[in-house]
Amino acid sequence: MNIVQRLGRIAAVAAVSAVAFSYTAEARELRGWNLHVPDYPGSIAMEKFGELLAERTEGRYTGSVFHNGQLGDQRFAIEQFALDGIDFAVFSGGSLGDFANEVNIVSMPYVFRSAEHMYAVVDGEIGERLSAALEPHNMVALAWYTGGSRSFYTVGKPINTPADLEGLKIRVPDAEIFVSTVEALGANATPLAFGEVYTALQTGVIDGAENNAPSFESTRHYEVAKFYSLDEHLMVPEALVISKSLWDSLSPEDQTIFRDAARESAELQRKLWAEREEKSNAILAEAGVTVNTIEDKQPFIDAMAPAYEKLVNTDALRELLAQIQEVE
Image 1: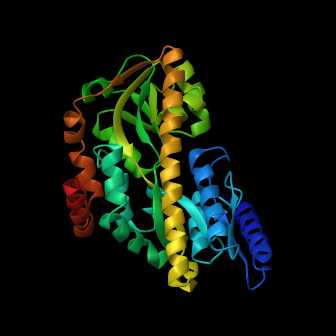
Image 2: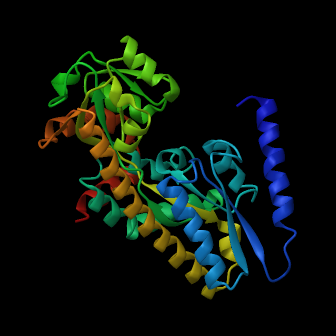
């Protein structure tokens, strides 16, 4: 984002804030940031959160969600929390880790054994610890959504063992965790803009990419990459956060309302996500995509040793990792 775009985003947030603060003493409209389109599972859940707040506070708090990154990109939105420019949002654990190092642990490859394991971790004491790590950045995590699990899709062959990835050019987002994960498995990590992936697969610039099933399906990447190998190397939760300044201003009764509403919205989001995955998998099957589940992930996990040594590099992160592994 260049300086002109950045100033434009700041002006947009300021304009929204000015409107929001024209409320009476009885009502406050909260500004919600969201990256995705309105019919995305997380978007629907955020709208539900706002509806529940309005209903249970009898209109004293309402929520307006600005979808499609209207108030800026994810990093810019996180920075706006320090200025009280945004009241609530859903952020990827990976993006939050750039600001609160302890949160990076949820972005580590194969750190979660299953979606159920991830939910047990973030819904318990570890989730509370991660929320505490966000407080210096004026954020409180009230609940955790799912971002699904990311697996490899390839053009020429399926992936069954790390050896199948050897030498392949795999597109990844331009972030260290993705690059380290793919390179540890012997592939050539190729950072590339998401909008360029289809053509890059089609022309052989890359041999594959990795993402969750709804993203693989909705982008129609399956038209050129006919193999989807479910190794589930990343399951990165997303935090529904509110401004700590707002949280601290709430009465204990309202804090309970906010937290309960957030958790109910998370339950809805997880349900909608599961339904969306099922729909995507049906579309992939109908399109003739070969989907293989990698039952033995241990060779993939063993290959992550260099990545873990590089990225889990503090006593706090090592302690968190051990606690996550102990959660049933």
